Image (cartoon, rainbow, N blue to C red; front, side, top):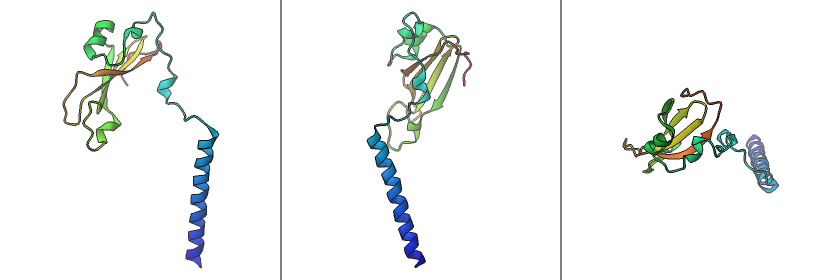
Length: 131
C-alpha cells in the first residue's frame, strides 16, 4: 500500500510540474534578459561606436588605444565535448569612462586565434579596473 501511495504522489507531482511549464509557455512571457543586455548601445559620438563585432584586438587598439586593464577567462564552451571552435576563452578590455570590449579567442587545444569582438558594453561609469 505504501509503494502505491508513493507512485501516485510522484505521478501527481510530475503532472503539476509539467502543467506549470505548459502554462508559462502559453502565457507568452518573455524569458528574463541577461544583465548585459541592460546596457545601452554606445552613442554615435563615443569612440566605442566605431568598434564592430568581428574586429580583432589590433583593430580595437587602433581605434581606442591600449586598454586601461584587461582580463581573460574560459567560456562555458570550453567544456563542450568535441567543440572545436575559437570561443573557449574570452578576453575583456576595460576602458575607463567608456566601457568594455569583449573578445572570443582560443580553442580547446590551447591555440589562440586573433580574437574577435563579440560584445561592446558602453558604460560611462566604467572604473577601468579588471574584474
